[in-house]
View 1 (cartoon, each protein chain N blue to C red):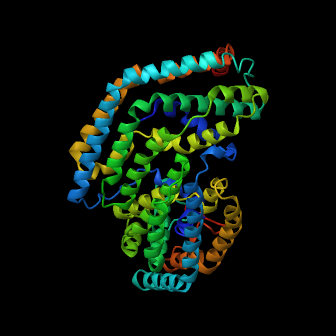
View 2 (cartoon, chains in turn red, blue):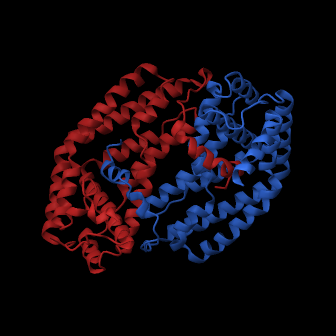
Length: 256
Length: 256
C-alpha cells in the first residue's frame, strides 16, 4: 500500500536476522476462545487436505501417467539437443521451462483434488486469530494455495518445440508468464502447515502437540504415495531432456 | 511442506528461483474489462491513500514526538553501556530492540491513518483480476499493511530494561513475540504500490505508466515531512545515551 519509512530502513536488518529468530510466544492475555477454536479448525483442515490427497493418490498417479504418455506421443524428444554447456540465456530459458513443466504436470495431476483443496483453502481463510501476523500468514498461505490451483498451464508441447526452435535461448512468453506466476504463489505458500501450527501452540497446546507429530507423518505418507518426482523425470525423458532433471547428481543442462 | 505445490517447491529449493529474476519476455495476459477497471480502481485507491495520509502528517508527527518524549522520560539511558560490537547474541539482541523500537514508533504514529488503511485494503482485496497470481499478489500486499498496523507494540521501556539486565542479549517474551510478528509483516507491508502496478501494465497501459510516475512523486512529497527516521534516531539516542553516537562513529570508521 505504501512504503513504510521505518519498514524500509529496517527491512534488510530484519532479513539478515530471519534465520536467528527465536520462537514467539504471545502473552497469555491474548489467548481467547476464538484462537483455540481456530487452531483446532486449522489442524483439522490441514489433516483433511492431506488425507484427501493421500486417498486420491491412485487417481492423481493415473493422471500423471496419462500426462507423460500424452507428451510422449505429441512431442517425443522435442528437447533433444539441449546444450551440454549452457550459456546464461540458455540456462535461464531452460530453468523457466523446468518450472513450467513441473507446475503443468502437478496442476494437471491435482485436478481430482483441486475442488476440495480449494474449499479447504477457502475455509482456512475464514479462520480468525487475535495475532494479526499469524492471521495474515494463515490467510496468505491458504490464498496462495487456492491461486496456484487456479493457474492454467499453457500447451507444454508447443512450448517445448518453441524452446528447441529458439536454440534453447527463450521460452514462449506464455510459458514465461505461467512459470513466473507459479513461482510467485508457490513461494508465498511455502510455509509448511506444521510451522504455522507451531505458532498456535499457546492457544491449544494439546492438539498442537498431537498435530506436530501427525502432520509430518501424513506429509510423508502423501510424499510416498504421490511419486511426483519419478513421473516428472519420466516426462523429461519423454521430451528427450533427461539432463534437465535438477535432482540428478549431474546437472549439465543447468550447470552453468 | 504443503501437499499442493510440493514438486515445484522442491525444484525451487534447488535454486531455480534465480532464473525468474531474469527479464525474460512474458506474455501479455488476456485482458478483460474487469482487469482494466480493477487496475484503475487500484491506482485510484493508492493515490487516495497517499493524499489522505499527507493530510494527516501533522497528527502523525505529533504522535511521534509524544512517543519519543514518553520513552525518553520513561527510561532515559536504559541501554547506556551497550557494547558497540559485542558478541553475536548481543548484536542480535540489540538489533531486535532497534527493530522493535522502530516498528513500535511507526505503528503508534500511523494510528491516525489506520482507519483509512483498513478501508483501502478492503477495497483492494475486493478487486478482481483474471490472472490468479495477480489476484493473489494484490491481496497479499493489501492485507499486510493493516496487519502490521494492528500489531500491539509491547512496553518499549520494559524491553530496554530487560535487554540491559540480560547483558544486552534478550528481550522480554512479549518483545520477542512482537519482533517475530514485525519480521513476518515488515517486508510485504513496506512494498510500494508500484511493485504491483508493474504487473498490471497490460491491463491499462497508459494509466499504469502515469501512476508509475505519479505515485513515487506523491510518496516523496510526504517522506520528508513525516521524518520517521529522525524521530527514531531521537528515540534511540534517548535510550542508548551516548552509545548510539559511539556505534555510529565506529560504523563510519569501519566504512572508511
